[in-house]
Amino acid sequence: MRIKRYVVNQLPEAMPMIRKDLGANALILDTKKINTGGFLGLFKKQKLEVIAALDPVKMEQDHKEKVAAALKQEKALRAQDSRKDSVKGQSDNPDIVNEIKSIKQFLFEMMETEQLPESLKQLNNLLEEQNLTKSIRSNLLAVMAEKMKEKPGLSTEAILTIARQELLHRLKSLPVTSLDPKAKMVCFVGPTGVGKTTTIAKIAAEYLLNQQKKVGLITSDTYRIAAVEQLRTYAKILGIPLEVIHSTEELKKAVSKLEECDVILMDTAGRNYQQKKYIHDLEQLLNEQDAIQVNLVISLTAKYEDMRDVAKNFQPVGVDQLIFTKRDETKSYGSILNLIDEFDMPLSYITNGQNVPDDITVATPELIVDLILGEDGHDRSSESIT
Image (cartoon, rainbow, N blue to C red; front, side, top):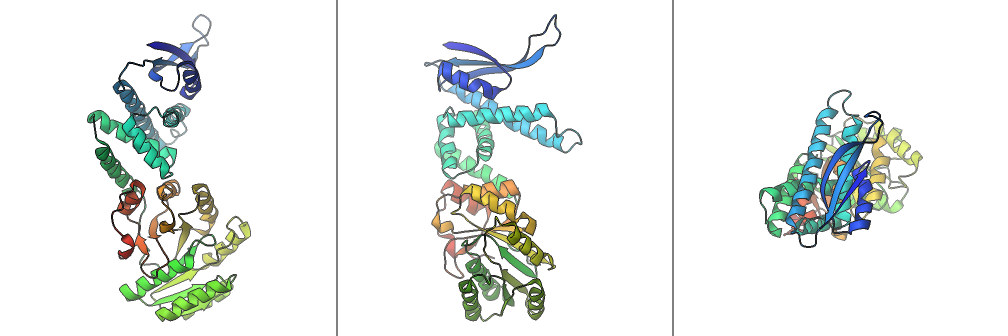
């Protein structure tokens, strides 16, 4: 067995040296803080001692236990930091923050260099294919490593079952809900081409046909003639009123005309969300209304980086909920969990086609986990959205 000792400031600094000296299959045997330097015991500096080894004969079990210990330590540190966060003056503790970053970086390094145990590596690959963030993946792997330590030799099927349970638990602590039944007015905002108008038609049909509510429509999307005509066609088919507005004053009049409706659904123009003037104008338009619920509509075909930009840029509008569209046009669904986890926004619906009113589903935790883990065993397009 080849064993080497490294003294560094933080664990990530040691990783390239270990790979260079011992290769990608090297194992980290131990880490501990030590004091170095100084004169007559004074002015010592605290460093991190890392012991790494390469043993081609040694069984993988020791490595699994080391990974599990590191993952468990990362989880414990996160919990400790979370508890401290609630106490004034403790949340900025640099030692805690740096150690969490160090452990996290260590986990990321293991994922990138494929040093995870084979069973966890397969799970990580699946989650990576679904474009889940490294942070979410490492947190889930921490839990999985603990489970494997308690019950060694778990099958791939058992690991997927536990992963499903953990994701469900995580999602149930996140906001997932349908439209607020108390909301008199529901507005839909988002980039161009995400399917806002079709989504509105589906929800209008649900309110009208299944909930027997009086529904009114408003559109401010006068930049595209086709958009107004599309919504007008849906309004005629459903036999519900439609008001077209161009200003805040016209919006007030439209709401007054539709005051006998139980719910008013409002379409907005899908313009360049990176233009501050567009967001400002939209903010001014919606801020004049009371009891309004704002839904941000995002396409699942978009890159996650673009989704993040959309969510950030629309925040001044006062987004209450998310709706994801075009589920049928992609096989990657990790962005659903990424976005609601990062922005803490409730998720209401996921749409999966052009058919009105069928292709829309309530975004339950079970549906999201099914999509991410590839266990969607039946056609959900026929499910009711109530």
